[in-house]
Length: 163
Image (tube, rainbow, N blue to C red; front, top):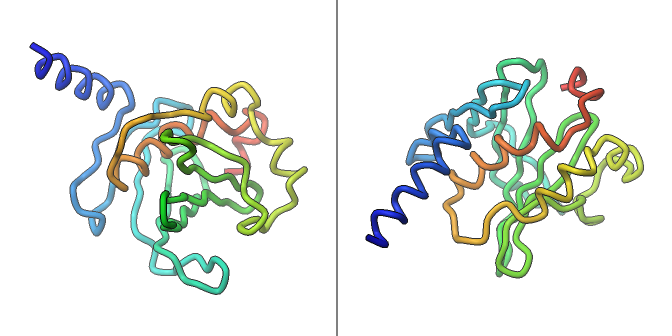
């Protein structure tokens, strides 16, 4: 009975989130963000993001209703993987904190844009709601899918046109 409930919970989560990630990172990860940004596609970028003079695995996140892609750099650290989500006017990071995965303001060591400019574009309610997205271990593909679904809600609606 517990097994059935567990699988039902996973199925419902995937259905609600609109995640239809494929197993291999070399293939595109696609799904529906269930936001005004629409469906998304995540592909591995040919141009890596450089972090602290080190090239990291980089993905391009494209939404069907936006003009510009969002870049996601993956920084693997000892205890956690940090996902640096950047556009031309906005940057934020998703990473683990005390056993949970969620959004955080960009660490100074990764920051390229002024903090004040980025902070003004956050939807404060969504930002605090996304501080904990999940508390269980997920694969990189699943985390990328979660970021793709949650990220549009993080941006204040008045700035959606800039994406």
